[in-house]
Image (cartoon, rainbow, N blue to C red; front, side, top):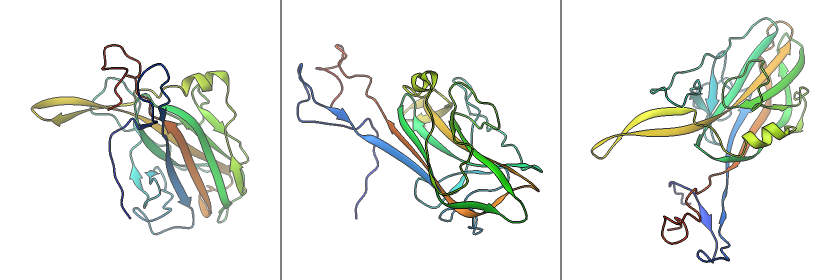
Length: 236
């Protein structure tokens, strides 16, 4: 089995130039899978994180990941503080890093087996999806998955007009200086954070159940059709 990693955007078609171009984008996917019964820890399949710890996986062993405070100018980026578990609410979640300016197509939350706890009763669960850790504030750009996301099933956000406008281009959330060739440059990325909010009794930290977060997106090529780029956009 072979694999490759390369910079996008990824386009395909058989008529690249002229008025009848049929070149389209490849839809990209990132995933993070949770197995709340996994106590093996950081770097194992399905590792769900812990108190104050979000993860990143993309269908490889999950590792602790940094959720940053979004900023278009602060470099190096500043890590956000994840709210700690409390008596009636706990937070778990995942962060995905994207090229800046991507168009988000959809977000999916699948519960394979029911989420459960030990010595506690879950009363509600919701997933907040946005460009930052989101403890409870429902911002305009935040997508909200149903508050009954405890039992098995597929849950998808309900999109408002403001949500759909925000999804057309991901924001500049992470700015850091990188050194390439003879001097420094800037690396700009977006981040998408899935914040799982569990409420119940007696610190309802999950210890059973499986959950799968999926983000589908497209990385556009801003040079398409630009007259200053030979001949009809940067297809080569």
